[in-house]
Length: 221
Image (cartoon, rainbow, N blue to C red; front, side, top):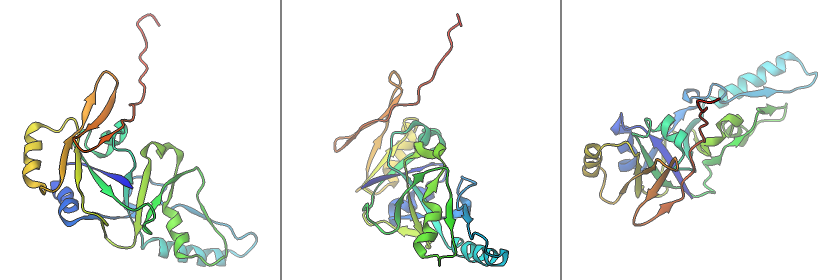
């Protein structure tokens, strides 16, 4: 399946690392921008506080071994370009990752956190700590690589990057010089009338996601 990594161009080395080395950097879960990452509850009924303390220590020790790389299923989302790609002046890297890859998981948006009982926790239980986020994040359409390694090796080489509509012609010419020739470079088009981003290339076209509606009060109100 096709997934997309939004990135700023302020540190080109990070982008080139993905394109040349064919790998994704995975951040420690505590570095992510949601302060509720990795939250959980322990439910033991009437069992002692000592058991809960032992369980909590074991869960947190296991949790601290995990690292995450965040991807999106949507390359045309206005808010994502604004938040994660330098206000439409950044880049998206298009990736091909099998939907059934063991390190890939689709994020579930829910107000509920993981609940642990006295049942022995498995490795999959620990991964579930990072596949859920609050409903306010749903616009991201996020998928995650959840692993214990610092880098995730891409199953397929990158073959396309998408430049934000505000990337300058000078920047684009430099990127065309430094990005490997096998990789197609496409500049996003901004439809100001419809308020949406479009990807138009000789090889593929991606259907745009409309921008959020903006309501403006008239002078008569």
